[in-house]
Image (cartoon, rainbow, N blue to C red; front, side, top):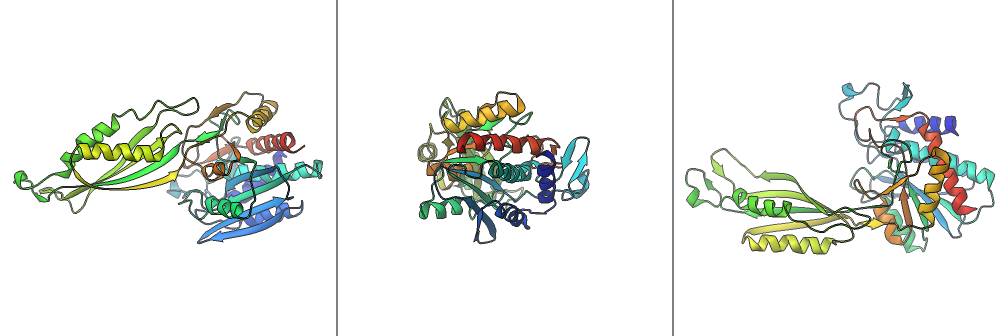
Length: 376
């Protein structure tokens, strides 16, 4: 399936589907899979295109999930080749989205097609869930599709997310979970005034420094067998209408927690507010939970994925929960076993994103072996 999967990857990379645009990628997939018995259902919310493709209606249901949108290219003059003209060079395919994650989508398609041709009477059902809203706000994409599926009783048993999980070589790492992401926006109020008369002002920057120092130095938890300890990071500090001779009236701090199942979002929020109250400051605090932590325990899906990688690539994969969030955070709460498996992530979101020429075909073979293991 090497040549077929590589050519389909190129066809998808050539579509400039910068989030939230799809630019016809989902149509290509739907047309291809219609010939092997998939029913296509378009689910559009706002400016986002989503596609639900399903074959059969019985359990167990294996879903391949991914996104057709890509991040912006950045300065075009920094690219070796046009990012939307897929180019082979020195054993690699260059193009925006090659690794994240159009090679995975192409491999989904060719693996499923090959499997159905070999096992037309397979047990269970197969589905693809594609969105154009993973690289953006992720509000009108996978989350809403999963909500709609749940409302009509379509349960997912197994899910392979095609995110680029590999570190140094294809298959060396799979993601069996992800940390939760909790965003905070803190405003600390002071009294605006002239820097020459500090006794007439109350500098909120000075007030925030010991608070941030305490938060940054806090050990929030010790992590678990699956997750590292929770981390706290300040991402931005700004003032309004600042000038070199003015003490600002307020300072705004944005920060982020990446946390495991050991510390819930509610616990972290309460602990931050305790610290703020200890320092006797006037503040406003807004929270946003952008993703809850999830983990797939050892079981059938992890065993079959690990065996498929070993048989195809000849290596023992490493289960991991590192990295950012993914759309798996919307699928796991349904009770599905979720594993992320995709290309090497070294160049994702970067200038000159690329993937080894043999990777799409190898990935297709791994997905095929997973299908055989779960549905025969």
